[in-house]
Length: 61
Image 1 (cartoon, rainbow, N blue to C red):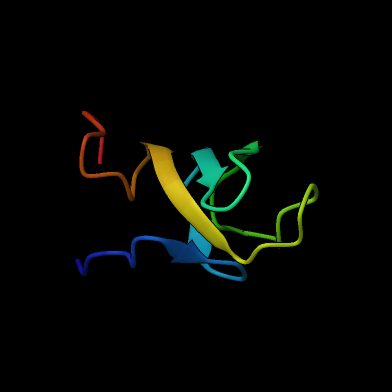
Image 2: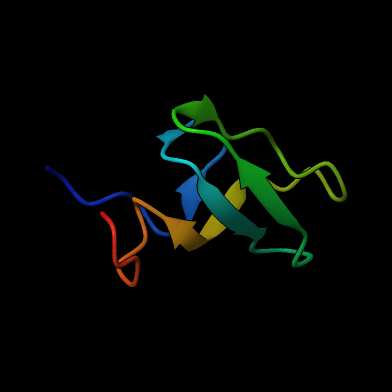
């Protein structure tokens, strides 16, 4: 299994978890394999993984 980009670009398929906008800090919770949208607050297209299967710190990859 490959590593996800970090930051994760909008439109990426991701596992369920929480992602934080790299621009304004908005936190987005998503379900499994949902396409990450651009940030609803600032329209930025990059997300930092806080929790989820793509996070290096996630205990349940």
